[in-house]
Length: 356
Image 1 (cartoon, rainbow, N blue to C red):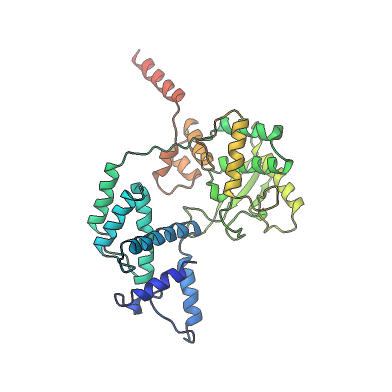
Image 2 (spheres, rainbow, N blue to C red):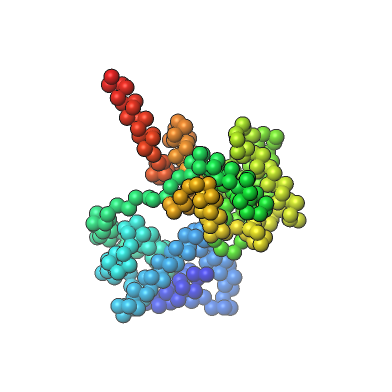
């Protein structure tokens, strides 16, 4: 959906670019012998990033375009003056944090690469990076206010669902989604949809399966840290637990198979038999939390992933184990681990006992 944007910008920039070095900057005639293959190449290049990332990049690009219009600048201009002015505009007029500005610049850089087949020297320049760093130093640090759904909170929510929260269908669906989200360290996007359902990327009935009498598996087709779409399997084992994760998933699989005729149908559907969306999931999560006696303001779908990391750390799992369980490719997982006051109190007790 961003091809027209890129090709239009490439056409306007032809006087500045060597069109022979960029597929997106070239005006290919309809009757060109390679037209079909060139179009296929263009579409495949766009597929190099995930849909969500592409949507973010497109938002940044449209903002960059609006900035040009507001200041009567020929679009697109990638000079150092325009790039740094755009960054200051995002900071002063849009009140964006440095982290968000970096995301916007990644989006603009992405389009520059498509149009010119190379990174923008202005975006990669020392002055640009120092400008963003300076903005970051002047902005107050924002703490992540999202609260973790720990094992204790998960257990209370599951209890609420099994006592009867909504319809039998919704209760079963949420029960399974909650358990998968927690034990799989899942992102909300890995169990729900934010766009039109696509069986090639979103969870289908075939993605949940029985490995043996002790193991269930859930296939994640793609995720934020799996841009190449190699996929990843989450395993749920038949271990003793009051919330019975294995039995819950097994029962839900039988339930969904009895409702549908094809395994390519959505794994999770709402009460209207439509694919479960992020909005639907988070709306019910907050309602279940409130019914469980837990203030819901600072919880979101991502709270399961944060809570799983926090619980794992509390249980003594090593950093490498937590990193592997959550499929983190960096040490970003450390920011997910929360320490409540009771844990800090016990740590102080330990310090005092060693002194005495």
